[in-house]
Amino acid sequence: MVDGELDLLVLGSGVAGLSAAVRAADTHKMRVGVLTKGELSQATTRWAQGGVAAVLHGDEDSTDLHLADTLAAGAGLCDAEAVRVLVDEGPARVGELIAMGAMFDRDARGELELAREGGHTLPRIVHAGGSATGAEVERALVAAVQLTMAAIHEHAFALELIVEAGRCRGITARFADGSVHEVRASNVLVTTGGAGQLYAVTTNPLEATGDGIAMALRAGVAVADVEFVQFHPTALSIDSMPRPLLTEALRGHGAKLRDANGERFVDEMQPRDVVSRAETWRMQELGTDHVFLDATELEAFDQRFPNIAAELRAVGLDPTRDLLPVAPAAHYTCGGIVTDLHGASSLPGLWAAGEASCSGVHGANRLASNSLLEGMVFGPRAVEAIEAGVAGPEASGAMRTVMGMDPDRPDAVPPGVIGGRFVHLPPLAPDPDALPEDPAKVRTVLQHQLTDNAGVLRDDDRLAAAGAAVEAVLRGPRGDTVADHELHNLATVARAVVEAARQRRESRGAHTRDDFPDTSPDFAHRIVFA
Image (cartoon, rainbow, N blue to C red):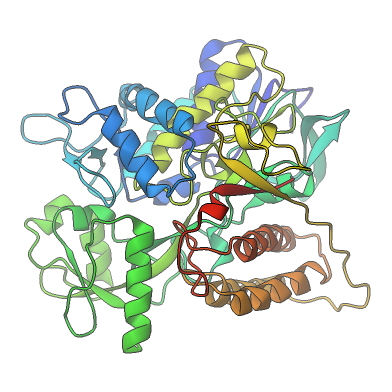
């Protein structure tokens, strides 16, 4: 248990949270705590097979090209100022991670090997172990945090934000022994990751239940861009969850996508939303539940991708001879808690970074391998702002949308600022006559509803069905186990995802409406819940 008030409480133990904790501990000026509902090394970061995208010293690449690629993938909703911070500060953060002991793949000359992934103009992604980048990043950061004086609390579940006099003052949490206590802190940094467990088919671990975003929604903190759920196009289509991921680097090295007839049907190096849509349409056309990734012509597969090779052979597939069955799987939540360029949310004292945040970097669709980089850049930026005595948000990054808007005149937006539309979701009272249900079974039903009706392809009828299913969960009985709280968090985030998807009557980035297939200038704005 934490005695006394912390200067900084970090929720979550992924790349953003641990990067922030290391930076805070390095100053020797802050009393820091890290609270995670699993073990320190179990965050979603460790599942990341993609690499870290950064323009490193000596590359023929440029940060301007990295910025342009990111803006293109974001389909008009990236904040260019936030992207500039990402691409300019990213290389130094990679260097710091290497200094901590992270081992990235190198060629025979000892130079970092750079790969190309979908949406990138040039090779600029560093990997570890071919497909074990997340695990290596997590290992290095966990080791660094364990050397600090940070108070680490594992198997502790954050329940609600404590808000007093208009400022976040900590959280209530359920600890491993079942007791519930307040954890007081002058500043709370939410780095709890995304909500991939909204879907029946996902690459995310069981812990990815949108807890931080749900707490923010319940507290009235601004949340945006949650309708943009990115599906990874090459999740291995086998009866396993989370679905094993076949890294984008395979396509970067020349693997091809083929349909059930063996025909190619898409440029594999386009952004993930484009490829996932193409796969889904082709599967619908042919009546199949997967397509194939053809990696048979890749040289030295076992040496380049030893983890994937072992995983494939464990399920009876030989990548040098077999076509690999793949299908889109929910992978990344592009939106979250709206922040400025320093990670400050609309609630003073509450900060966010990584997948739980909406910094403006990703817009309508995340560019491959920008996620680890975002956590490495914006987690420490929040610490720097706290150290400098910043008390609340400024009009920068995605926060410009919130602070630059008049709720009564959503069209009144300062020049150069992406506009927004404010949405308020009133609480849904539980039905007093509802009978208790097994939260695991209800979670499964909710996941299938979201997959079928609010997944890669959406339309008004399907979204209405998803919305009704979500409301039924929120009006159901509320137990007090961790499973019950996770279910309630998933349903809270799902309600926002579905409502934003219903309001966005266009197709843009990772949001595709069959009934509104075109991108519309009328929707070149964020949908903000506040």
